[in-house]
Length: 201
Image (cartoon, rainbow, N blue to C red; front, side, top):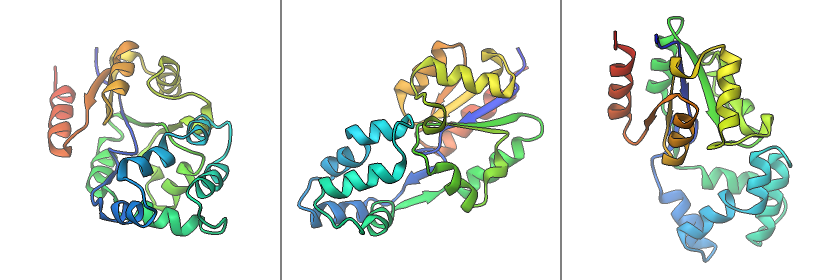
């Protein structure tokens, strides 16, 4: 079956933590291990709620500031420092744009309520035909429903789509509904694998 759509994850794919030093310094300043800081921000109860839209991102950050014993008005400083080593892969975005109009390009991201605004502010919302953000749809990877919704929005069959993600469980989730999937670990390797799929007769 001819491939018609390519879906990308956001965190770990389009935007990646290229420099760990800012988070490491933040953890040390707070008297935490690096992994403990990640857990508080990404794996807490409020993070899980924000991921499926039960609370908005601001509520999660307020709870995080409290958990870290930081002042309530310290949200922006915390965000800036925590994400200070993250880089948006502009070359990848250029590549995504090059896929259109031959292919439909979609986003499937487990993310909080601020992601769509962030993408718009960074000037690459045009790279997507449609964006599925977990906080907006109340569904999250690796569950089948979020992939099924993404396929429905771009009007493609599972076998007509490929998905790139950095988490193995999300790759398994995409494959469980019949999509092809690529485990994104190194950009060059992942895109070479994608090109092989796109060039299949």
